Every structure is written in C-alpha cells, then in structure tokens.
Image (cartoon, rainbow over all chains, first blue to last red; front, side, top):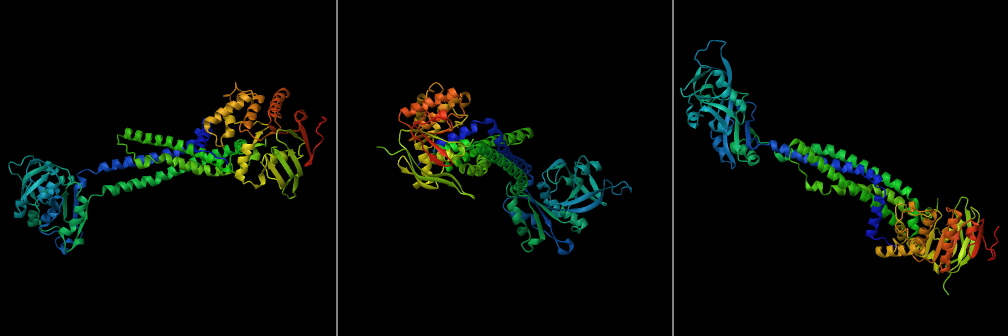
Length: 398
Length: 231
C-alpha cells in the first residue's frame, strides 16, 4: 500500500509553488486583491462607523424632546399637566425638564409707542426657567427668571443675544424695559449663547405664566414642547417612560423623540457600506478563484508527464489530487495573508490620513487569510479532480 | 528457485472498438529473474502495449500475468499502484526528470510514496546516484546535465526501490551513439549484478546487448532462437 504523509505532501506542494515563483505570485494576485478588499472594507466600515459615533456628543445624547401630538391643541386641551416638570423629574435619570412654546411673532420695541415702520418683529417664546437651564445658557449679563416669576406671571423677559443687540440692550442693572405689542416687560438678563436650540437666541424669552396671562394659552399650530435633559446614557430609557409619566391617561397625546440610538445608527451606516463593498470584495475573490483555478488547471495539463511519472512511482490518484489541492490551497493562503496585510495597511493609511482611529476588528482580521485558503481550495477542486484521473500510461506519451 | 520475474500465460490486449483492435494476441512469455530481455519490433507492432502490460500501466483483456509470482489481476487499483512503485523501476526515453529538482531529489521521488523516512530517502538516493557514477552531480539540476547524465539519474531512480524488474522504454532514444553506449554499459552492469531488465526498443544496437530478444510483429510474439541475427 502506498502512502503520502502530510509533511511530504506539504513539501511537494510548496516546492511546486516555489519552483515557479513568478507564476505563483501572479496566480495569487486575484486572491490578494479580493482578501485585501474584504479586509479594507470591513476595516474602513468599522473605522468610519466609529467616527460616526463620535458625532453623538454628550449633549445630543442626553436630550429628549416631548411634543404635543394633538391635531388641534385648543380643542384637545393642555397637553402637559400643570405639574409636568415635577412628573418628568421624577423619572430616574432626568436632570432638567421644562416646557416651552412659541408665542408668535410680535412687535418688540424699547419705547411704548414706537413710530410706525421702525419696529422689529421678534419671536416671543414662552419658556420655563428649567427649560432654559436645560439648554445650557451662557449669560451675557443679568440673570434668568425663576419659578417665582413664572408662577406669579411677573412681567419679565430674558433676551437672546441677537435680539438684545437689535434693541440696543447691553446692560440690565438699570432694569430696562421692552414693549412687546405694547406690553412692558422688564429685561432681567441677556443670554449670550445656548448650547442647545441656539435658534432661541433670536427670541424674547418670557415665563410661561406671564405669556399665558398676557397672550393666553398656546395658539393652534404652535405645539407646546418639553425639553428633558437626562444623565448620560439614560436618554433611551427616559424617552420610553416620558409619555406615560406625563399623560398616563392619554399616552398617545405626547410624541417623544429621544436621540437616535447610536448603535442602530452605526449598524445602519455600516450595513449600507458593507453590503456594497462586500459585494465588490466577493467579486474580487471570485476573480481570484478563477485565476487560481485557471493557473492550477494549466499546471495540471502542463505537468501531465510529471503526474504520470508519479503514478508510475506508485502514487495513487488521490495523492495527485491532494498535491494539487494543497498547492492551490497554499497559494490561496499566501494570497490571503498578503491580502490581509495590504487591507489592514490601507485601513491604517486612510485612518492616518484622515486623523481617524483605525478600527480593525479581530473577528474580521483573523479569519481573513482563511478566506484565501477557502478560495484556493474551491479553485483547486476541479484541477485536482482532473489530476487524479490522469493515468500513469500518459507519462510515456511524448 | 525463485519465481520468474514476468510470467504471461495467454495474455492478450484488445482495445474495445468499434472496431475492436487487437494490440496483443494471446501470448505466453516467461522472463526468469535475472534475465536481460529486449523486446523489439516495428512501430505499431504492439511493443508499447507489451510494455504497458508488463509495467502494470494497463490491464490485459485476457490471460494471467504473474509478476514475481503475484497474480496482478487479483489486485485492486491501489495495490497495483503500490506493486508498480515497489517492484518495477521505469526508465523512459524522455528521462522524465522533474526540471526544478536536483538529481538527489529526483531519485528520492521514487520513494516518496513508500514508507521510507525522508532522511533515509536522501541517503538511498545518494547511494543510488553513486552506483550509476553520478556521485559528483548530486545537487545538479536536470537542465544543467547532459542527456547521458539525465538518463543515469533516471536509472538511479528506477533502481532505488530495489525493484524486481527494470523496465526501459527506448532508453537511448534521445541520446547520441556514444552516450547511448555508456547507458547500455550501465544496464549491462546492472544485469551483471543480478537485476532483471526488460528493454523495449526498435534499435538493434540496443537489442543486441540483451541476452534474449523477443520480436513482436502485428501483435504476435515471435521468439527467435537465442542467437540474434542482426539485419
């Protein structure tokens, strides 16, 4: 009985590859490119994905907005109960909560009876003090009104920086007044900046109690909103509980919008990229497999005398199949290794060039050379089958 | 008395048609161990068929073939391969050396499919090469060797498994006369050492070195008297 040890088989296959290094290298190029694309795609997706993650700042990840979902707010009644802020704060993880709504565009002036045509219209926003704090204000001067002003309906206002500049209000120590549609309000503070909802810098901010006393409840089409600031990581949970906490009697009345779940967003982005480029990588691998199959097949035809000779020397058909299959598997593995290096290198290069953090997932990197092996084995199947069927008699044909 | 190296009784080979071609008619032939036999005949006479049958490269359509006392018809394909590798050493016209392997590696290849360890393979290959007078060319590649040297490597490869029979197919077909003589001297030397040798050739110069000449014509073996008359 003849046999061929694994060691001898490996040595024969390796010699077969190394005796024509140029051809072997060219054969492996397809696999190199395929595996390199595969690794680069996975690496770049992971790297880009982690960059997308970075866009989720602590601020946006800790904000939950609730909004009146009713079609007609006047008909449906108040969306938020009187103690809405207390209810929201009762939820574990909530740090600040406050309601606000737009009280419309109104004529704002520094004098009681401004000359016609010389009056700016500004948005007036009814906003509770805790809502302002939830937006992380930076004060230019003065202070922000508190719940006392709110509950008493005190005629006070806080100006956004842009409005204050238009009106020429730079200091509040003299208790300047602004007239909103002729209603005098004392300016007690000017906000220089808001980290959230910076568009409110274009508004005159008044306590909800004051706004309601002067202009009535929110007009239809101006939904009441609530801004909730949560602890880091609690936003998803808070968003799930907020509607129930605010309106246990009518949960659907409140529409809650939490921050997008970073994991799902990342997965979505990754999936888009993956699907497209993995297809490309598969095509490359396919081309690589065809390359190996072609060269191995040509090698089998070229080496018919050698195969015949080996059969004369006692080799069985399966020994020949094993030899050629091992050769193509080795070629595939070498291509896979080289491709993995190239792919990882290009991910690193891109990451360095873009100042990104390169992310190379072990689950993608470690099996990548095996992908080359698999390609080689698949590509070698048919040539190996052909080699096993060559009869020893063919060595004598010249 | 040992069994004859080759014993044909009624061995025939018919290639199935249509129409069926009889390449070798029913033949009785015995090659005793230690004999040097030449098989001659014109092209298409059935020489190659005879060679293939003797070398276990082909199966007879009829008859019984005992190789060294073993009935090869009873063997499975795997066993035939093993017997072929152990009992028969082949020498081909075109040498059939692997071009990228050194002389030692080429000779050691004959033992690749046997259970000889890698170290012993090399040792035995070196010894076989010394036996054929190539001790100075151990690491040479076939491409750097002369035809005569290459054929000597092939002979060493045929010998290294200590076969029952060395089967040569036109061993000097690719060699000039002087080189051919040196290879034939080598075969004669092997025969002197007790090796059974069967040479298939259409070259009378080769045939006349043998003890016995078997002529094949139209698939029929015509065995003349032992004294060969050159044409």
